[in-house]
Image (cartoon, rainbow, N blue to C red; front, side):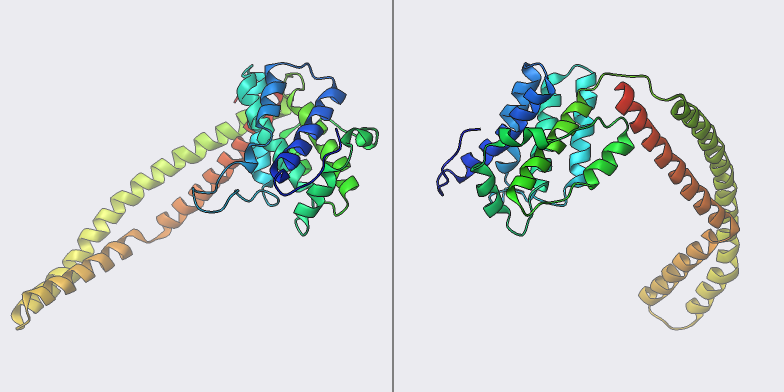
Length: 293
C-alpha cells in the first residue's frame, strides 16, 4: 500500500483505501483467483461508509461496533451464494462483512485517529505477522466473530484486520463438503419429535376449544342472563346496561379460556419453539458445509 497523506478532503478516500489495501493483500496472500468474485468484493468494500441511515441527516449508519450478528449473517449469505456459484452476490455480502470486521478491529474510543494512523502505514509489512484459519462450522463462525476485539494500537489493528479478513475469506471459499452424519441424524430425530409435539398440540387445542365454548355458554347462562334481567328491572339507562353486560362478557370469555388444557398448550408451544430453534441451528450447520439451505 502506498503511503497516503491525510487531509480533511481526502478523509473518506483514505479510509476507504485502507479497507481496499487490507482486502487486496489478504486475497493475494491466500492465492484466491482474481475474477468477478474478487472484483465485486473490492468494488463494494467501502459501501457501508456510503449508506445513509434511514435517509436522515446522519451521514453514515453506525457500524464500528456491535454489528457482530450482522457480520455473521453477511458471511453466511456470502458462503451460500459462493457455494451455489452466485459469485457477484457472494462478493457483495462478503464486502460488507469484511468492512465491518475491519472496523471492529479498531477501538471506538479514538476510531477516526486510529484509522488515519492506519492509512499512513504500509499494510503489506504486516502480512508475515498475520495468521489465518478455516472456520469449518457455523458454530465456529459465530464464536470467532463474537471473539473479535478492538485494538488501541494502529499496528495491532492492522494485524488483527488482516488475520480476520483472511480467515473469513478462506472460510467462505472453502470447498463444499458433506455435512457430518451426526447432524443429519439429529435433524431426523428432531423432525420426528416435532411431529409428535405438533400432533399432540392439535389434539389438545381441539379439546380446549370445545370445552371453552361449553364453559362460555354455561357462564353466560349462569351470570349474564340473570344480570341482564336484573338491570332491565332497575331504572338504568340502556347505555349503562350495554356497557356492564359487554364488560361481563369479556370477563366470562377470559375465564372460559383458562384451565389445565391452556397451560398444557403453552408448554407444548414452548417445546415446539425450542425444537424449531434446534432444527434451524442444525440446518445452518449443514448449509455451511454443503451450501444447501
